[in-house]
Image (tube, rainbow, N blue to C red; front, side, top):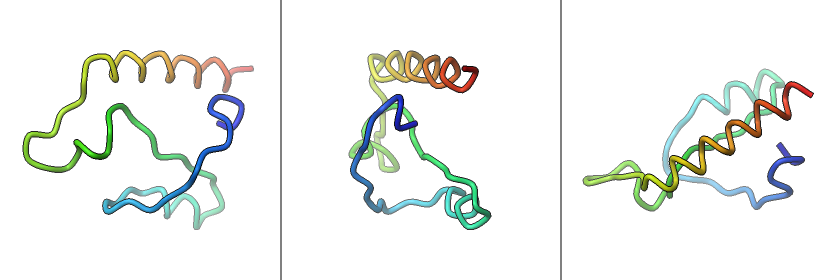
Length: 68
């Protein structure tokens, strides 16, 4: 992941994922997805089409990098 995105800030967010269970089992994990957390998990949440397109490009790069 560092190869793809470089070093990024880590921070806590007010929602849950299974990532902590993977971390506890010794498996590094990353939580990512399209859109902004500012628009998620609330009334009228949305993801812009441009963010979905960027996500597809990113996921393609993840797959390409993992297969190297």
